[in-house]
Image (tube, rainbow, N blue to C red):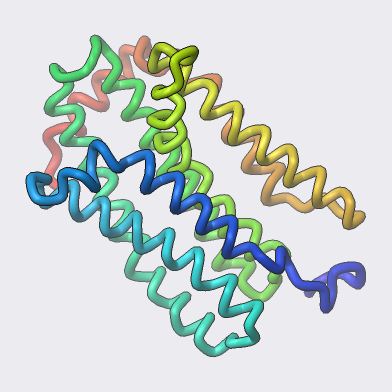
Amino acid sequence: MEDSKTKGKPFYRNAYLYFILAAAITIFAFLPSYFYRLTVTDSAHHFHGITATLWLILLIIQPYLYQAGKLKWHRMIGKISFILVPLIIISALNMVQIMLINQANYPPHKAYQLAFIDFVTLIQFLLFYILAIYKRKEIQLHARYMACTVLGPLIPALTRLLFRIPYINNFDKSLNISYILIEIVLVLLILDDKKTGKIRLPYLLALFLFMLQHLLMNFASQWEWWTKIMNAFAYLNI
């Protein structure tokens, strides 16, 4: 149940616009490596690109339908996620395998760091999604958990965009700044919640998880146990 201070109030009336912005950032970031190379890209990358794009479209449509009062359509389209989320997980894991198998194309040990980021991001994505479904009858929590699902995938997009800025002249700097930007966004969202008189769990949980991931990802490539697990995972059949 919603508390008395928020009952009847719209949750981020223009939330779909923020998801459109997230989609625009992602598409623009991946223009050179994916969208400009559609005719020469392999099926695995297409599978991942299509599922990720469909998730962004879902995030745009759902809050719009809710604000428009089309709750029946909101629920019906929401059920698509039961199929889409497993496909996203499978496609992302496949991309990690491809990266690990072809790690000779990356700087030394970089593939292990990126694999750590991808795995943790997938776990967080799945966690936020499950919590959103579990709290589907509590709109204030449901909507916030769903919003959190877009933050992890934004990191590779932001990293690619920032890397084009002259001052940000190396990958590690770009990657760390991307995490900082996501953390700043979460702090701003928490402060916005505070204005309503109640700070809720979703953004606090997300901030903690992203800060932890941010810290650990700088050391993951040095962990021998992680390297061994990833070498074994690279040749598993998914």
